[in-house]
Image (cartoon, rainbow, N blue to C red; front, side, top):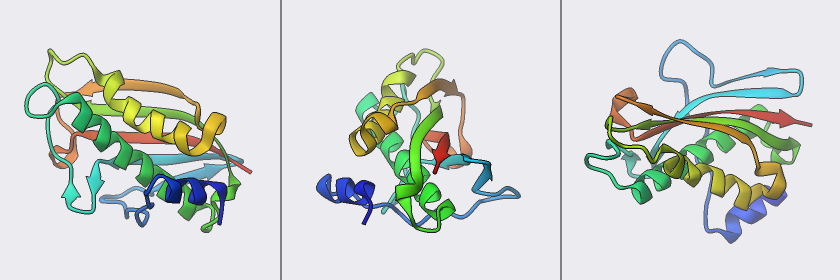
Length: 153
């Protein structure tokens, strides 16, 4: 069991199975020690987390949606590493997209849900560069989508 698995258990969290691509793309690409993970949409055990921030969803709910994206990103990293999460050296960068109204300007607070979780799980290895941007719409009406870049051992 990796330290990430131990920390997940301590937080009462589990990684989902790595989601399959929904179109003509791959879930991740590794170039050298860098792993690029395709955007992961907000989804939990009950299904897609839908909503538009600033209209029918509050920041806290958006941050929880972003946490599910972070867990899906880690699930893709685990798949890329053949199940061995101890190969994850660090989170390099996240790009977070928030389904939000034109007047909503708290996208960083929403994506903090993912960033804070990765730091809680990985410590300094989870600190990363980041972008948090608004989108008029996201696939299937989800609240959040996040893509990531990771360094592997």
